[in-house]
Length: 469
Image 1: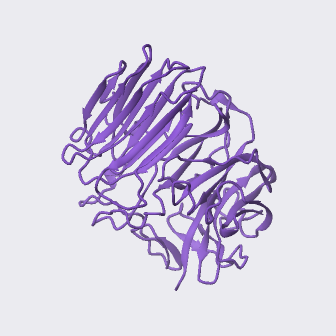
Image 2: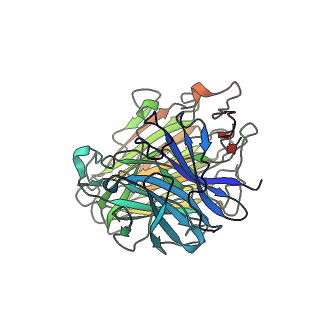
Image 3: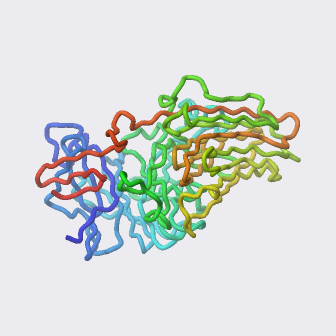
């Protein structure tokens, strides 16, 4: 029929403002873009069974402006005015439109946020979310609720594709204030959500109190090669999602409004209550751990903590390598302490895997963190699965996502340091992570999504696509 459902979002209509849910407080309303050859319009559908099936609203579309580049509504509830708010991309005009509604059915255009940051070819997938500001970003456990300042800060996150500095797609965010109709950024700076190449169009979960860290999940790929990366014969899909991330704002060294990104707590997935490998004296030495048999999922969490770093004349490196004992392939990364003037470069490299070759699949990524003179510490936390690595620096001040495709399974980890100044301390820990899908796999190892066959409703097929039925 030439129709397709593009990105959108879903909310819980607790107070039945839409009128769809006279006898319940947990009705779900989804707002999404319907793409046709003629235009892109914003439509809604509602669910009375927790999101398993959706009924198409007969009054659609709820917003139509006659454009073929108008998409990706993200909806939130703004309590001070008791109204719904949607941010929608006028994609190739480089505009984010802000709309308001009392009932999710009737929408009024309120304002625009336009031509900000990196433009690329088009804006996509905007998010507007309120989140806490830390009082002290240098604490060892900064996400303690006692460390949250009482500020009404928002971020407007905008994804672009193509046009990223490293090629393809990327997401950026703007800290600022929001009064229910207008968003005002605190400055004109461009800030990115990820320093590597495979984290795009992150979506924030709805309904988390603004006084708590917000949670997002992103698509872990890049439009430059997303449609040609390898896939298994039984999978029938490409790409994966990132680990869920928790977020707060913080005043960090050289960045007064940094969006901290840290993995959502996953300790429940540890394969054992104690670490599989560790060292508290990893200074100018290394540890090696073979996990091919002990961790069937192939997923690990690892951390490197470097302390007592001199503020001047610093030398040394701390590196990690994941390799395949059968093919010799590897991915690697590390911390370089000799950047000078407190500059600490961090890098990742996937160039020694041989399962996928593409001119746009660039292999090396780097960023910098500034050494905090009060703590003199650099922390790196990493999470690796069979074909994705995510690293988080200094409690999430920077994050990097990198997918990779080895011909042989990675099964060995080496963490080591070299040429460190006397007095620098280094510790490392490694934990195995269990599969979250193990209890849902079929006999051939695949996991299927929800399948419903209700008439005149939208359903999700076993590949995850929404279909009209």
